[in-house]
Image 1 (cartoon, rainbow, N blue to C red):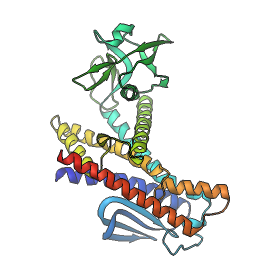
Image 2: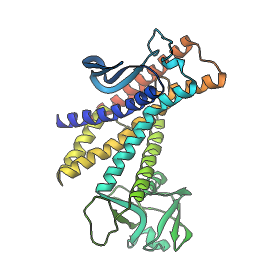
Image 3: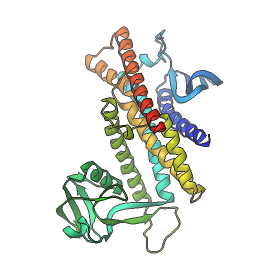
Image 4: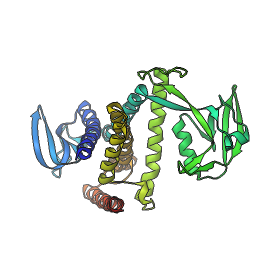
Length: 356
């Protein structure tokens, strides 16, 4: 039960951030926001302040920011959504996902500043590993993996994972020069993954307890790390969602509400074994990943999502006139039906994993 409560709070924060993006962009653009809602379904709380009604609805998954002109009556007034230019409407639609990326960045920054971070720099080469065989040295910085620029340690791990044990090219920065190597990662049964064979340098966060022999990271480095970490989550999410939307993803690669609750609960309990701070950090980490997920999901060019509406706006800009309202309505309906299919697919996977 506690896992469900934490999960609902976390999802609520992500939804509020997303809808606040739409809300503030609409307000600044002079659009009348009629309702700002957290949750879907029947109203369980309502309060009107100024011209906007703020509501909490029964189903805690999702939310919306209803602007004048979005309802079926299609009200067109000086402050309606559709009375604004394509550029303004584009900004309003993109503001929701953008705020999710901002929230993910803030969460990662907070985690990094209060804990420790691994950097793609070799502290120690492990014995009898590919890293030792090709001559990597302590102090080497991993610069590129298979031609992909590496900024943070997580990017390197992602590239190794995607390489699936095949031979790979490794570019390292040593004394201001780049050296290239070829190696085949070694499978580690304990970690159930492929490893190069070195221990990374660890840096202490801005507000974390100092550790003798470890360098404390700077504000700029923490921001840089948080930015590239957020981009890495976005990239991995986009790749994963593309597999889900094409029904090519494996069941262990995706999860719905049940998986989220289980993951949040397990992470909180695991962190609690060390202390309350660690438990909270684990939940915030999941929140950062989910926020990036929500932002990417809404940018996919599927009707009924922000990305679908942005795509239609681009079509309108190219045609220099809006689509036929009836046609646009049918497009959104088809998109909604597709999303329902995806939700059933994901929920089925959740149920199967739950009973296995």
